[in-house]
Every structure is written in structure tokens, then in C-alpha cells.
Length: 104
Image (spheres, rainbow, N blue to C red):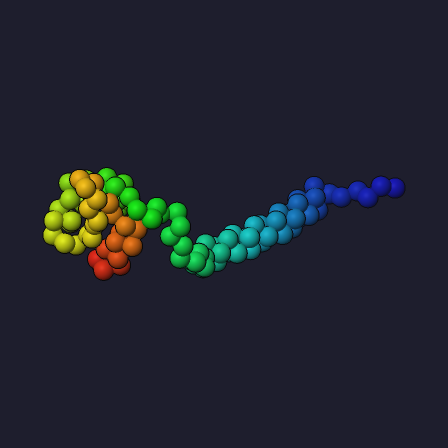
């Protein structure tokens, strides 16, 4: 004779299975929350993706400012440049130095 279960027994079994699944989902959500709240290790400081030298408009874009603001920084002596004829060249180190000295 096959195992005959009443509708109530089937409901209890299904409820029990659902509770196990819910517990696994809650555990996975908790693990995910912990992973997201734990800061990832910062990558090693590498500035190889920044060109060794750049024109002033490129430096302005890199700094997230307009070209006229970059010119103002140069005029104020806050951003070091190298003049080659009429060209204004901004060394990578000058951009990095500016960023490190003007942090908030």
C-alpha cells in the first residue's frame, strides 16, 4: 500500500521544507551583507595608467576640473608645469603631488 499522507501532513512537510530553504536564504543574505561591509583590500598604488607627461587639458580632465581652473592653479603656483616653447607640459608627479597636498 503506498504511503498515504493526509493533506495536513503534506502541508506540514512542505512548510518544513520551506522553512529550511528560508533559513538557507537568510544565511546567504547574511554572508553577502558581511562581504559587502568588509572593505576589499585596496590595490597596490600604481600610477602606470597615468601618462608620464600630459598637456594641460589632459591634466584638467584627470583632476576633474576645467581647463581654466587648471590654468588658475598653474598661475597660483599650486600645479607645477614645465614649459617647452609655447607648450605647457604637466608631469605626472606634479598631478600626484597636487592631489596629495590638497586632500581634505
